[in-house]
Length: 156
Ligand SMILES: Cc1cc2nc3c(=O)[nH]c(=O)nc-3n(C[C@H](O)[C@H](O)[C@H](O)COP(=O)(O)O)c2cc1C
Image 1 (cartoon, rainbow, N blue to C red):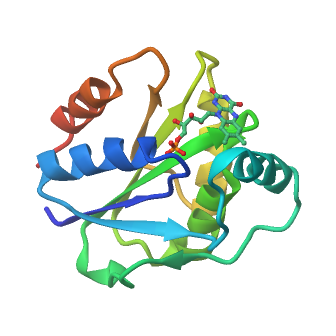
Image 2: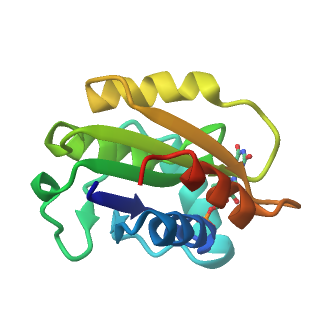
C-alpha cells in the first residue's frame, strides 16, 4: 500500500512522530505549511492569534506530491488552543477531496485533554469519515513509542 505521511510542525515534535510512522510503513513524507514563520515566543503568540481567526490560511505542500498516486494519506498536526491547528484544518479543507482512499489523522498534544470530538470537525472539512485517528501526548511521554504503536496497527 502506497502511503503519504503529511505533517505540519512548529517545534519538530509532530515531524519526529510522522517520520517514525513513515519509516515503519515504508511511506513517503511531505511537510505542509501556511508559510508563516512561527519559531520562538513570537511564533507561539502568532499561532495563538491564528487559532482564533475565522479564515483558513493558504497551504503549500513541500515537494508538490501527486496525491493521486497514493492509496492512503496520514496527516499529522498539533493541537493549538483546544483543537487541531488551523494549518492542519486548512490542509484538510483545501486538499481533502483530492486525497484518494483512506485518510488518517495523527494529532499531537501537550496535555491530557480528550479532543476526540474535534475529529468530527476534521471529517467535515474532509468531506467524508476519516479511516482512523490517534492522539499522541508529547509532553512527559515517549511519543515515539506511541507513534510506533499506531504504525503497528496499520496495514503495511
Ligand atoms: C499556540 C499553541 C497552542 C497550543 N494549545 C494546546 C492545547 O490546547 N492543548 C494541548 O494539549 N496542547 C497544546 N499545544 C501544544 C502542542 O499541541 C504540542 O506541543 C505539540 O506536540 C507541538 O507539536 P510540534 O512540535 O510539531 O509543533 C499548543 C501549542 C501551541 C503552539
